[in-house]
Length: 314
Image 1 (cartoon, rainbow, N blue to C red):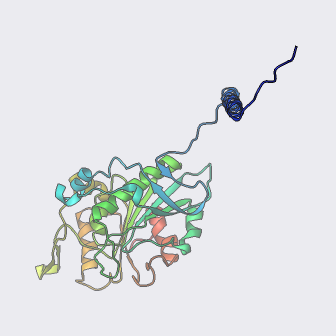
Image 2: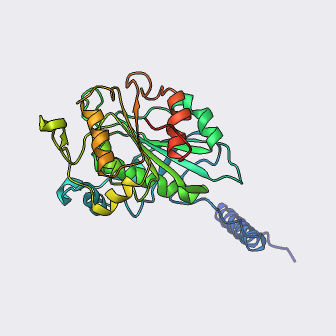
Image 3: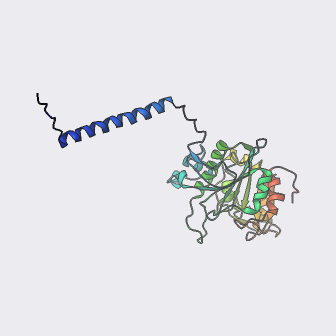
C-alpha cells in the first residue's frame, strides 16, 4: 500500500508560527504575574507627596504644594486690611519655588527658622551667614519671587502673596524637620515690610523690619510741629498685642538725628507698648545688601536678640 505524503503549504506555516507566539506570550505574562505575587511588598515612602525637598544639608531649591491654613486669600485680607478684590487672583504654590539653607541635622537640637522676604528676586543664600546658621542650627528660607515697587526689579508679586508664602514655608518645614516653635523669625526688606511684620505675630516669634519703617498711625514730631502720615490700616487688635510682646528689630541708616522719622517711630512705638524693640543703624548698601549680608550684625546682635539672649538695648 502506497502511503500518501501530507502537503504542508505556506498557510500552515504561518498558523503554526502564530500559535507558538501566542503560547510564548501567555508564558511570559504568567511568569511576571507569579513573580509579582510572590515578591515582598515594597516599603512605603516616608516622603510627603506635597513637597519636593532634599534631605541633604546645604543650599537647596525647594518647591511645595501644600498651602498653610493661614495663607488663604480671605485670612490674608483680614490680616492686612484688604478687600476680597485686593487678594485676587490666588497664587499657585507649586509655581513659587524657595531657596533654602539647611544645616546638618542634630537629633538633640530642633531647627530654628529664618524666613526672608526680599525686595528683588532671591538668586542665592547669604554665604556670610552660613557659619552662624550652622552654629545656631537655624534654617534659612526665602521665596525666589519678591514684592516691591523699585522699577529696576520686574516681576513683583503682591505683598499678601509674599506673606502667604512665608506662612507656607513655615508649614512645610515643620512637616519636614523638627522645628523649635520659639525660634521662628521673619525678616522683611521690601515695601510693606512693617505692615506684614505686625500681622504675623501669631506665627513668628520675632521679626526684623529693614528699610520700610512706615506705621499705621501718624508719627508725630515733638511739640506737634508736624507729623509723618499713617501708611496702612491698623492691624487686628489681637495680632497687634501679640506683636508688642515679640522681639522686633528695626533697621535703618539713621536713628540718631532728632525729629527724623526712624528715631521718632521707635520712641512712639515704645510709648505704645513695644518694649522689646531694637533699632539697628546699618548701611542698606553694604550691611544688608542681599545676598552679600554682613555677618557681624546678624551673629553678634540680631540673632541673639531674637533668641532673647542678653543684648544691650540702646
